[in-house]
Image (cartoon, rainbow, N blue to C red):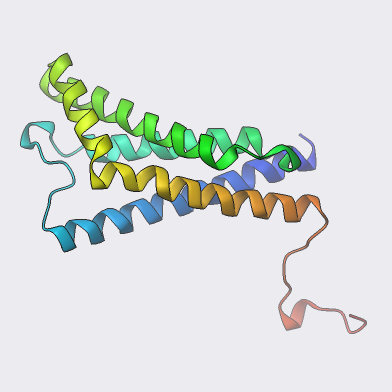
Length: 158
């Protein structure tokens, strides 16, 4: 694997970890501020929310890993990242709810309800923010930017 492909997947991995952290943080704060449950249905169980977020983060990771290999051609990357993350969240919620309850129509209604609520709309917004920062990082790396060095790492000539 060449260096540009490897660095694209590394940047995508860090971006996915950042997205996961931001989604958990944002959902926690919104839940506290609005006094609302993230997963409003008690029939859903405890794993529907984490499964939906995992699907969303995986979609972001796969999209960025594939598309950051050529950072100069990244115009629609943030919009696509937001779209894939939202679709994966809704699909993950629908599948998880269908497994937990056994109802297909009810799972689609639940998943769309989650997707258009505050919690569901935070996911694509955060994915777009993370994708934009990943694109900037990949463009900087492809342009020759290096990571900052600590004072003890620098040579005396620098």
